[in-house]
Image (cartoon, rainbow, N blue to C red):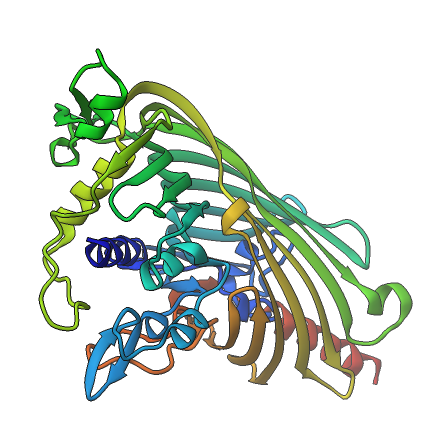
Length: 495
């Protein structure tokens, strides 16, 4: 029975880490002058053209971010791919791959309309796009339970997931307030599409008695999707032990049947607002320190107020159970559990005994991102710059931090390239970007986290990988070119 229980919990764990896609603002582009999307990293940034416009492919970014990788749960033994549960994978090796909190995060950004122009004594931007934010957290203790199940008590916390999807309309303005300081801000109207949160906390398992296991679990599920209903509940019978210990109580109870969930006519389910704030400080103009500039920004300071949020929860009572007897674990090494998703879902539902909690409203923050940067352009060759960027995501359990060191070079007026190395909460990574911006268009390709080695099925073995691309259409010549031409003309006239 315990062997079955171990494999069932491992399967649940895998369900939480599968199928996540991620993206973010492309940090590798922070120090590029000819990057049209710079205002999304810092609203104080000014584009070096008169303006630009872009349509659905102006900014597309996909990838994954986390500290839990496929290589942490899969191993090759005797020519076969097996999970960390395989007997040939010793416990010390398997558990050394996991962290206290194992995170998988994603931020999807797709810009549908993107416009920038100089007016009102500053630089202005208009953006319309869609975004999503997904995060899961799996505690170390859950992996320990699945690998080293023994007759002892377990206390597992911070096991959960969260997801939001929304539309965004942004209006930005940046302004040069004096020769050395530039500030900017962006106001964003948020249109909520869907919201979900799963929190499984205070899971206490008393497994010291081999004949009777006791569980106490607190779980809450929130689903903020228009037209969402849990559907008809299913009736379950209490265990014989429970009936003996609670004489006179009903012999059955009702819990949510996830097979009956229904969504009728989904649509807008909330509204909100957010702000981006940024600044740039040119120390060359302030203190004559050639080539040195400092900048900072904080993005997504805001929230969405969701309506019609469906709740599912339990009351945290202790109960006895017999394990996950319905899981069809295959014979042999016991590490293959294809086609068990429905069984796992049913067993997990039985364990947490979720019941319909009615509907409510909910305000959720977006998860703010803070950037702090220093850049230095060589006085003898201004087309070569060195930069340091510190990025911090502030999002509770799903927070992270990253420091990135970059080298950027502009070998020609229409071309920029940057390479960088980053290290932080979620590991080390390499990033790059190529930015091609002649007069007719601006095409960029880049990545903050290189894909690295792939499995035989073409799945990246590392959890940090992304790819960003976009095409925009600049208006007018480079402002840098104009300044250079103007200076040359003045010098010629003086002669």
